Image 1 (spheres, rainbow, N blue to C red):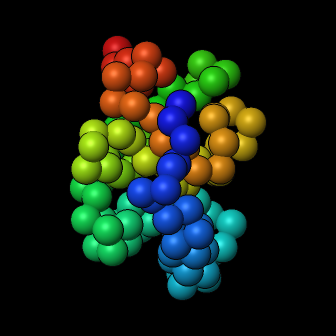
Image 2: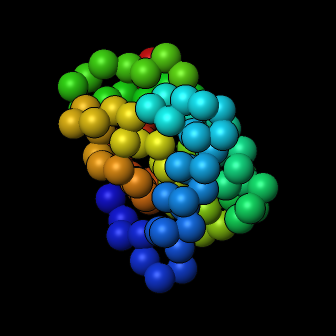
Length: 103
């Protein structure tokens, strides 16, 4: 797992995520698709989607995240998975083994 680093504005991402969630009147719903779309519109990071294998080996049926310009993956709604995933905001290298395909 990578550190978010100086190139990514952690506070701006958290603020945007909160705004999207409250906009729909569903602040406790992850809204991964809408958050990823908002991040794409604001920062230009393309949305990606697929299934996510959680740490407890369960598979999330569909999830959205963004791909940063350097190829890393940003999961801005990772908080929805609580202890079953890697944290609140997650940035992974595209080559990280945790991203292996789900068959």
